[in-house]
Amino acid sequence: MILNNLNPVYLEILSKETLKLILSKTFNTKNMKKLPAVLKMKCPQCHEGDLFETSTWSFQKPFDMHKNCPNCQLDFFPEPGFYWGAMFISYIFWGWVSVFIGGACIMLLGMSVNQATLILIGFSAVFFIWLFRISRSIWIHIAVRRRNKKLKRT
Image (cartoon, rainbow, N blue to C red):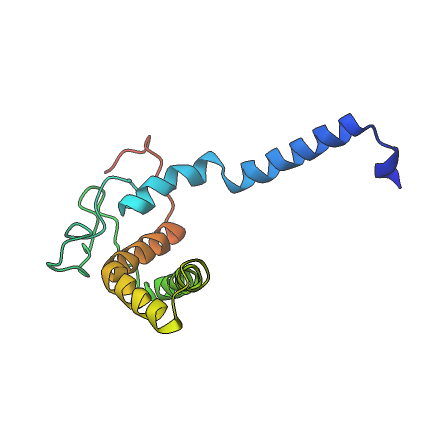
């Protein structure tokens, strides 16, 4: 119809502009600035204080979080049960990881279902604490906005 009558060069520009718009909305600079803080498990407000008391691969107090940010004093536990949503993030994430790892083991490596299950159990045991922590980091970064650096603390 109308698209058939358009110049092919215009259609190419239109599709590039549409793609740029979609990418700019999805991967805008505001979202990309949060990604390092999420992955490093830093405070969502100041991006400097640590969420957890120990490093990710430490087995001493692996689940203990600071009550407040050591830098800006943001409350990491704003309400009882706040981190229940993180459970859903980890469930969805681990479900997809299991599908991909299990599928790769069975389809690409030719393993049996039992062998792939053992690989998944081992993988889960190694990355359990990391998944727990990254899910909490994602959840609090969804809920809390970054404070403007120009504001002075009182």
